[in-house]
Length: 347
Ligand code: NAD
Ligand code: WQD
Image (cartoon, rainbow, N blue to C red; front, side, top):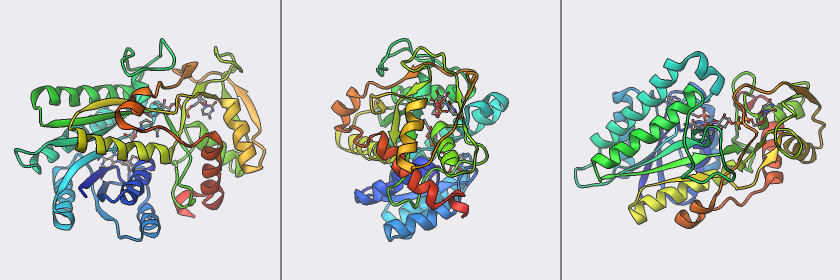
């Protein structure tokens, strides 16, 4: 089986994808600079997979670090045959305070990773890359559910890096037919591996809903601030397409298979097609955890949209992939991770 290089390998989505790839029989090499993840992820991956992870600590903006990762893939598995580029900074609010850091890291990192892939691929071989894009590229959606051909826009620097990332990759394909790119537009990844051994471990106050609810349920935070109750949705709170992290990980395996077997690029939504409101998520979490989630109604968060959910038809048709796990699975697995690791990977 081919060897896949994961950038941002110890992060939330990559760590689950790493396991899914190993389970599917692929070999994996990872690189991460731990700017938003813990080295302890590697211990948990070893425990869950029974294999020592092949890993390089380094920054993807640094060509030498990338060269070391490709060399490790060459030495252990005969060469890297595709890259999944997860490495990026992802906090929307922070991106408006430090836009240049986001451009340097997310755009600089993408370009350096593409250059390294090109450097380490023979001239007659395809250049295969899976790119972590985001539903944020749809800006304020005009129509729901959202299809891949909907208008694109950026409402903050983070979103701009995803839009530009897709554009850079599309341009590469136009210039050189060897590039095979899968841009995956994730909706709202939540939950954890059912073992409870890996999961989402945000630093500081969580920006996203589910990890915040998890910390309220476990008693680390007093109550959930519900941002806005006058949205144009059935209960007035924001509606999103939450997708179980293991379904998302499986989507990456399907996308890689597509690149290897079909030899064609694609841009595709990874979502369930079903939206849940903030209140529905809080209730589902109470049910899964048996804990109360006290609510505090707060003003809208700037930049938030009423509702956002995917049309997942293309992923089903092109990749033969669809999300299988429901909101109760998402909350139950999040709760297992949160309750067994109240301080994440640090305790
Ligand atoms: P994460 O922060 O858990 O993972 C990103 C990883 O990349 C971290 O381990 C971090 O240390 C690493 N990293 C960042 N910059 C790096 C650099 N220059 N060199 C090496 N490593 C670097 O985030 P995640 O939620 O797992 O997100 C993974 C990808 O998916 C990101 O590209 C993100 O933008 C995208 N995405 C995430 C979501 C979401 O809600 N979680 C939604 C859509 C898209
Ligand atoms: C979900 C809903 C909030 C926290 C963000 C990024 C997006 C993508 C995924 C990377 C909204 C409400 C939240 C809280 C709340 N990331 N909420 N109280 O905003 O859909 O997407 O993460 O690409 O780019 O923007 O997700 O989890 O932050 O919010 O009421 O404490 O929960 O208003 O309606 P969002 P989220």
